Amino acid sequence: MDTAAIIREILTDYALHPRGFHGVVHWARVLENGLKLAEATGANQDVVTLFALFHDSRRVNDGHDWGHGLRGAQLAKRLRGNAFDLDDASFELLFRACEWHTEGESDSDLTVCTCWDADRLDLGRVGIRPDPKYLCTKAARSPAIIEWADKRARREFEPTFVIEGWGIPLDFPGE
Image 1 (cartoon, rainbow, N blue to C red):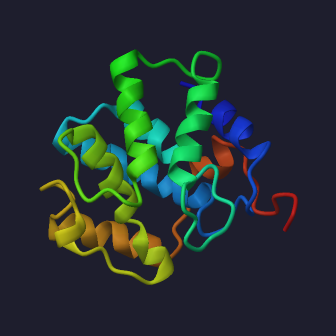
Image 2: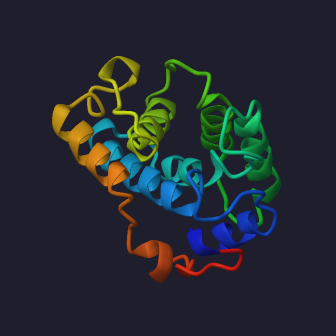
C-alpha cells in the first residue's frame, strides 16, 4: 500500500494546516500506535493503517467538528479501488471505524476497537492523558502502552516517515 500517494491525495483538499493538531503528524502517531496495538490484538493492519490516514482527513476545524469521521469514511470510499484496495468486509470495518471514532464508545470488532484506541492514545497532544476506562482493548489499557504513547504525543514526537516516506517537509506550503 502506497501511503505516501494516499496522503498526497488527501492533502489536495485538506481544509486545515497539514501539520496542525489533527494533521499528518497526528496521523503518523495514530498509525504507529495502531500497528503496535495490532501486534497484540490481531487487528487487520491494512484497516488500522487506512484508519490512521482517513479518520481526521476531512475535518474543517480543530474543535468539535461533527460529522468529520463520516466525511473521512466517504473520502476513503471514493478513493477505494484507485488509491488502495480492500475487500468488502475490511472496508466495512474501515468505514465504521472512521465514521464513529469520535462518538463510539466500544465496538464488537477488535479491529475497530484497535483503531479507536490508536487515536485515543494520542490525546496527549492536546493535554489529555488517555484514560484506560475509555480504551477498548486490553493492549491499549496497559500502563506501559499508555505511558509510551502519551509521552510521544506530549512531546509532539514526529515519526521519521512523515518527512522521509510521506514527503511532508517541516516548511510545508502554507506555514
